[in-house]
Image 1 (cartoon, rainbow, N blue to C red):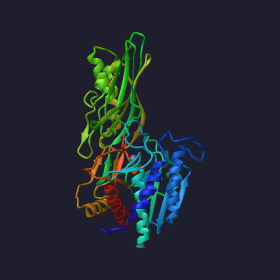
Image 2: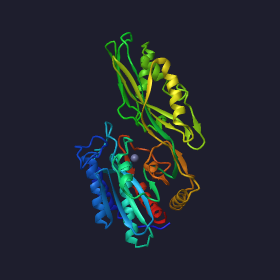
Image 3: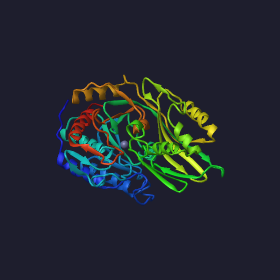
Image 4: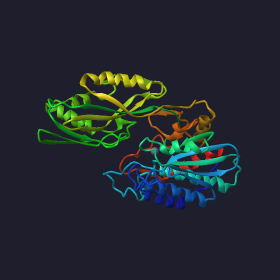
Length: 420
Ligand SMILES: [Zn+2]
């Protein structure tokens, strides 16, 4: 392992500036031809590119969808892929979410660890390599997308239309060690029109499909019910508490009957007969995310993470068969195929070696339920930026990145891009 010099103060100052740019996916200001993903995303991309130019690197803003920063010379190009959009910062924060407060050895802010922080650390790792003057024999390109969080990935689609594809890539938008397999992601909406014979109830919970809903409310016969839960990333719904499911259980306990309450009761792997798993990527998960019940319609949108060897249609057919007796229909909102890179490939073994040398840990490559940019390119994996024993704070209130983790990540990323 080579130890590189980190200009920590300057880097943290730049990172705080980046966190101050509000680049919430889908709600960050005016959408224009120049800024198709909103002004905030555009400003965040431009800010990063300006840093890249300051460091003497080549840069390009790809029509406001993404940007890239490149150093080195040669035919071969290895990429680090990050994103500059964030999820929203709802209630529950003890710090100003768009400021970058440092407290108790942690940098707090929306995007601190997902994924503005790792993106900027990657840029500083490139700078450290450039400053070290070691010949690289290749180009390193930092690709910065602006449309990751909602799953639309218009940034990567746009990139692939005109820009050069990397020979290999990693994305520091997940956890260490190397993630070589990611479950498929399926977003569905299960809905039913309600006839006049059904007792009207009003129910609402959740706003974001890849987050466990932390609040839900209902009105039944003029009585209001509310329930709170705990938000978590939809890829690990067991780490949260689903307020919608809790509320439905409460209503059923009160003797309320409604097709939606029956649907909610079966919205789990066993209830829908989709309890699939494989050795490579683990168990199927389902997160009932967004519930809307009015007098005329009931709907439940869900985020599913499907093991890599299980076919999407197998899952869809099972769900359809399970909900049809209740009169519900299933529509697909979004599908992202699984990721699989051979764990014996040069990319995986090289990153694994770097990780071992930098941390002393020999954790084997892993498979997760997250959906990272690694799926956007061939021969790409997720690598970092959270360590196995670290608290996961992305998508939650008080998102942070510890300064200790930032320092370690800087060394790992610099060593990784040097040898890729
Ligand atoms: Zn992310």
